[in-house]
Amino acid sequence: MTKTLISAALAIAALSLTLWFKYDDWFVYRSARLSLSSLMKDPSSAQFRNERFIDYDWYCGEINAKNGMGAYTGYKRFISGRLSKVIYLEGTGMIGKESTDEFILVLAKKVDYLESFNAKKGLAPEIALLSESEQYEQARVAVFEDHWKKICN
Image (cartoon, rainbow, N blue to C red; front, side, top):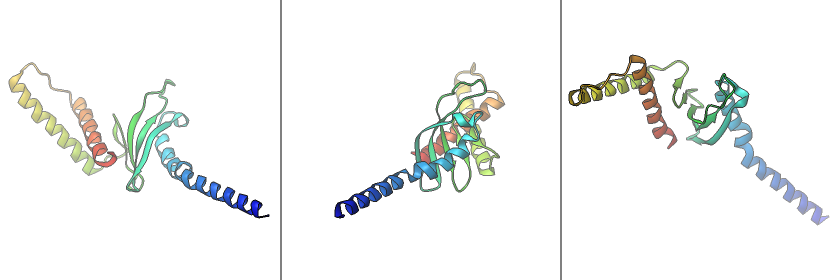
């Protein structure tokens, strides 16, 4: 009788410990993964790695999913705000409607690029200016890197 009770208690303790360690995988990460994978061309193909929560609100990691041609695109870093509902994707920047603060950060990066270009132009006149869209994309990438360093590192 005593052995049975001890065995049952150990089994319950082991199950509780397993559930406690798996809670994030089964519930917290699952919810965050669903919101991110729904943004992909093929949501069911989304693969995640190096995931972690920072200060309860921020969820950082890498995502890989299939593109429209059915091929995996390679892992890209992401930052997702659980409370703010903001999502950043490496190479894309902020997904969804850009906030005023984000727009100002991107413009500041464009100004930095233009100031740097003007300084280099005096030394090497053959340097070509990036197109407006290339400047914007470069600025969004730089803003993502700043967010990654600030939030996820």
